[in-house]
Length: 99
Length: 270
Image (cartoon, rainbow over all chains, first blue to last red; front, side, top):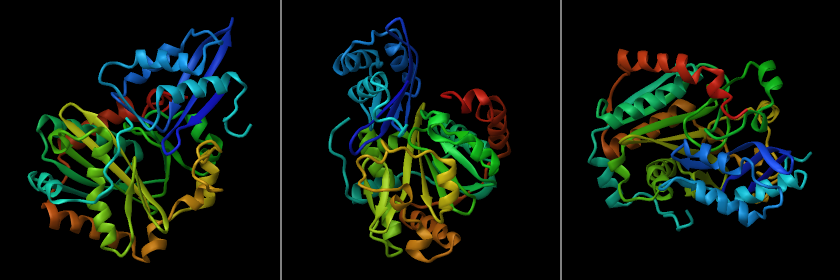
């Protein structure tokens, strides 16, 4: 499943995932955002792995926010944008690439 | 992350920061795409360690390629079958941002490798404005109404001219910018996947309308634009001609073998 969210005036974040027994699995977070340090992406992705499919956008955003290492900076996107992309993926790809 | 960014061009305080450093120029040399990626990391590290003075490098390209941003997924950005058919290679850079389709004479790319003291006290977002200010001034010198648009775009009335990206390594910051000189729109559109969501707040119907290549905007040869940019930098901040050392080149070539030329790196996000 694939969902995307572009922050107005900012960057695109895409989330690819599978759902197994109502939990997110094999999550990939990608996009044209900036993230410092680069390795923080691993923490962001890990924070989504295993989450229940019924979490709200805000709840997902909170998990992402907590997972970002101290001092990490996400530019052009946000935990909320990642939450929105996850919800879109789960809703069947609204905001995805036209298909 | 949401603080307002400066949109002014270079002011006296900024100019003093630039002039306080002893800048070197690495002129354009055509290099393989993966070697260009590796050189960015090696030179940033060396400037961070104080093993190389602050440097402006003009890129040369030995072939067509797509350069993916650090966090982009291959399948979301590239039609690999089309790329293979057209002889377009695929590489991933160390900085974030978006995919670029590059033809050797179609792009003007430069990197600035600076000690992080150059942008001390600036937020990440403000440092983009800082690094782009001189080139916006230089483009204005060519008669364009160029301006910086947060976070990382350089635009004019004629369209988007280019985009910048940064990466940080211990003690140093890399700021590189690619500007469109001339576009092969059909090939670019065939190789890059440009989704509707990406264009959702641009108010435009196609990617080609977003870009205003410099050839179209200036009617100048590519080399003349590069000379003008380098000359502007030299005049304002000082710039001594330099070349890559054998050690730098050897280290970058090793880094291609170990990392930037490997499938594990390029397909880090498949």
